[in-house]
Length: 254
Ligand code: BV8
Image (cartoon, rainbow, N blue to C red):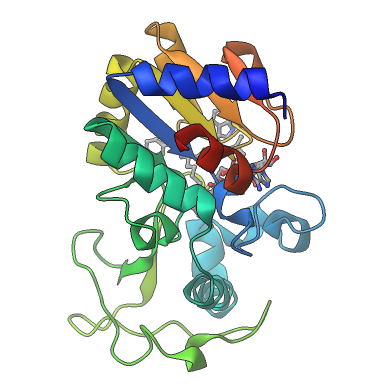
């Protein structure tokens, strides 16, 4: 990593009054949580996303889809936030008017100390009743129980809602489903008003979340990318810091 790029980015960050940190699966990669599209470890490489991350898939094979999410949830519970998550929380405390917007469904930002990250795609830890989006359906007994981990690719029947008996589904946003309105609205508002947007660990291909860095750039913000690989976001970034988040983000707040 060229130190001149890094120090330039750190200066920009230090002078910013309003900062958005926009994260994707890559920020959790060094915590051992598989990303979606990286060749060797990507979840999609071993599982067909369209087969599993859709309402249709859940209706056609609830045990397979629920098992996949429970396997992922158990992996996240065993993971630890990495220095990238910790540095993100440090940015929030350094810049009072800052916001973390994440596409991730893990809770590693929260566990690293981020106050209230905006989850555009929901959370592995917010199961809800399939019958009504409105009522959460915490299911007794398996929330923190290792036994919930069926093992990779294994089936597990979803529990039933304790209120109405319908199936419980993962509290994530599936392909073809709308993002939570309030979360998307606050993310768009923050992106349009920030001075600097850090986009960290995202391939920038899933919409409408991928619009967020573009909204910031179109509104005159400086967009800085942290990613070991080039992405379609490169062209809107003032700086592309090529490297892992757990190494680069701490250097930005040092
Ligand atoms: C919707 C939750 C409409 C579930 C997820 C064409 C144009 C526009 C839209 C579409 C289109 N075709 C289809 C669509 C719609 C679709 C979409 O965008 N599809 C894509 C594939 C083209 N979008 C939707 O369906 C959305 N809904 O449009 O609804 C609507 C409107 C109104 C009413 C009804 C309907 C919903 C999308 C949300 C899907 N759910 N997650 C789950 O988790 O199982 S998306 C999933 O992808 C995750 O949330 C993930 O975060 C997200 C984005 O992926 P990334 O985070 O970028 O992760 P990825 O693995 O791809 O990349 C990792 C990056 O990290 C890489 O660049 C890598 O280099 C880097 N990296 C690796 N290691 C490190 C690192 N970086 C830093 N440090 C490291 N160490």
